[in-house]
Length: 198
Length: 251
Image (cartoon, rainbow over all chains, first blue to last red; front, side, top):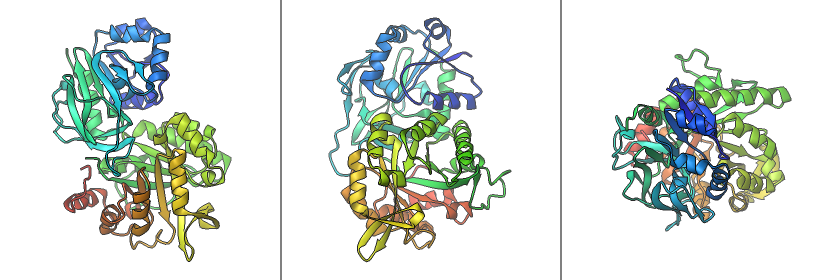
């Protein structure tokens, strides 16, 4: 199976490479349109700032390429946020695959620390991405912005309020958490993504 | 609900863990990668690797080790020791570390916290503070406790947070190695005054000490070294115990 990781100006692509390596997959990191189009699976991970990463994607015409992909795509963390309509981080219009706006966490009490960082639980699981996983499984999050729950939400997590831990529409999948840093649960999620049929 | 974290800390010198271990099932107990992997499989939530090597050659070995850790384990990890400038942070993150911990360098030049935070994000920057309770209150110390900086723990922790640190890793030198529990009073005050997570360090000797660090000290995470390395407390039984004590823990 050919797996491609979208190459852009986001940090921490290597964690995803390592996670795939551990599953016996040797992915290619590329921004080449042809290479991306012919891959069986695409991962769109990343840490970074929504406005600066979005500007880079536009400049390299990767925005249109990503939106037109037909094979299963998995956005991770900022990848998920960039797949939404708009982000408050830098007040930027994003890819619009999911018709929902990304917002910044607003603490309501002293215990609500931003970024939301650490292990938290997945609830209301409804996606083949979560096959063989139990409700309340723990995964690892690091983020200050979130996607509100919406019609494409396939898992929620409660921090300050429930938000979208994962999204799915057609061939597009996304997680706010980092499966590549989420131990065995994360490994299962990546394995599920590799096995998914749409 | 966000889980409280259990963090084993591994001291590394010339690519080998320094403190001995009782893990008979490890092929190479001295290998930090193998030990880190074993901890992650036992349920550790995060790992800290501290480079205690002074030499240039040792630094290179440590960076290579970080690369191997990143390839082998699937949970977040922090590296510390010898991080003095942005270039060191860049090198560690490129090798695959999720966070870096800075200590002396931040006290000497606090702007380093701002620089790391704005370049790589606050979540990358863990500000480690070694402090001792003196007659004049809690003072921050440098160089493994040999130099009293005169800085007040709470003032420095607030400044570090204001400058953009993502977490405070507070080690009480009065409690470190004594195994009578964490500095819960100081921890609780830090938790009350700060809006970033606090990691408790120094003093773990029994399972109850972890419970108290979370319930009394209000810590977000608890770090320990020897109780794990010598097998005095197993991570699975510790986490089971904390869960039964009503603490939100990832099992």
